[in-house]
Length: 250
Image 1 (cartoon, rainbow, N blue to C red):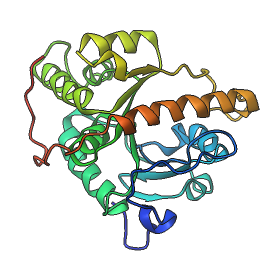
Image 2: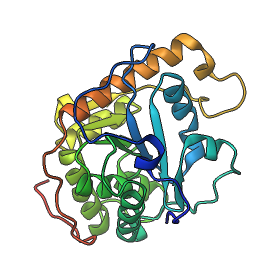
Image 3: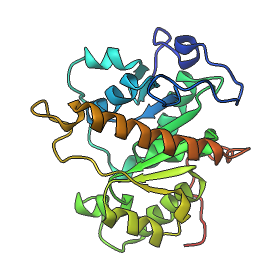
């Protein structure tokens, strides 16, 4: 949970609640005020570095606190426990608190959620949410041995994730397999984006993200996705339901 000494998004960037787009940066990318909601910060730091270099203003929120990217670049490796499907609904409540404490006035233009629980908290409380998927929640839980395939809990979380897919302004997938699975789950085709990343993009060795032209192309790709999510933002996010499962049509 963010503490009283942690910077808040509005304080850090003095955001405006106006919806008019600010001028583009010298890179041709809009300087988005984007909140990255993630459990493992190190997994997305290369992406955050690209966004900072392009003139965006990313802000990181985790279950343990929040801050600007430079705070995490100087920090030790994450010690967050692996995500468990069994604690997912408690995690949703924690994410809601963390996000609202980091941005109490909801001044962020984009909430970029990197997990099921943060995605559920995001679409319930913020209008422009990007849901980033490395796999479907029930399939990842099954692969991790947290539930049986086709069990009631797997089916329940598949339905719950469909709620996120229906509410998110944009959905990012990183393989054609996940993209097809998302479309099979009823996500609007125009909201689903495929962003292919190098296998070694999180490593410290020869990192493709250090290639300037690649970084620029990636920044423009995320800029276009954020533009879509912002244009597709919901006028009134769904009201909080204290973590209860919301049934929708499969």
